[in-house]
Structure formats: structure tokens, C-alpha cells
Length: 104
Image (cartoon, rainbow, N blue to C red; front, side, top):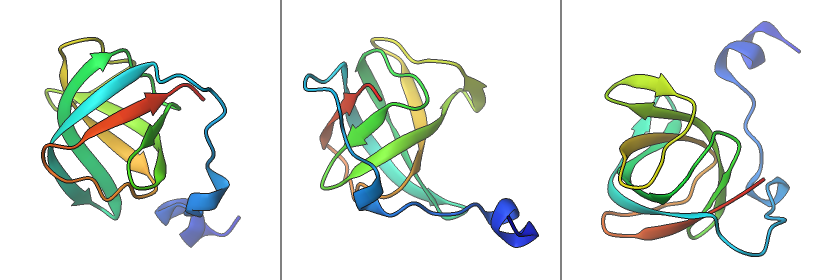
């Protein structure tokens, strides 16, 4: 792997990420959608439980790379938490959208 690819990270195509589970484990209500260093970042409220590695389904599917709460990285988010999800891929979510979260 080249230095630049390791530094900037390789992007996966949307069709490479697929959902295996049938029932969503959580829902995520989007309050704001940002683009931070080329990664889509969604700010909103969690209904259920979300871990990094779970998949978020909007118009397309994206992988949760990192979860931040109060500008600190956390291992998971539970019901009622207001967090930021840093995604690998694009969901094209807008304010007010409710996205389904699936286990990987």
C-alpha cells in the first residue's frame, strides 16, 4: 500500500458495502450533515445502540468508521445519545432524515 493511499485512505465503492442482517438494530435521526476531511459526518440522535463497523442505510449504504460524543471518540452510542458518526461512504442524508442502522 502506498504512503498516500495509507495517509488519505482508500475509498470503498458503495456496491462493495452490503447489508447482511435483515432487521435494523437502531435508528439515527439526522440533525446535520457535514463533510469533514472528505468523510461524510452525520450529527444526530440515536434510538437503539450503534458500534463502529455497523452500516447506515440512507439513499445508499455507508460504514460507521468512528463515533464521537462531545468531540471525543467513544466505543458505542446508546438510546438518546447525541453523537457524530464519521462514515466511510456516502448516504446523502439531509436534516430530518431517519436512517436505519444494521449490524455488520
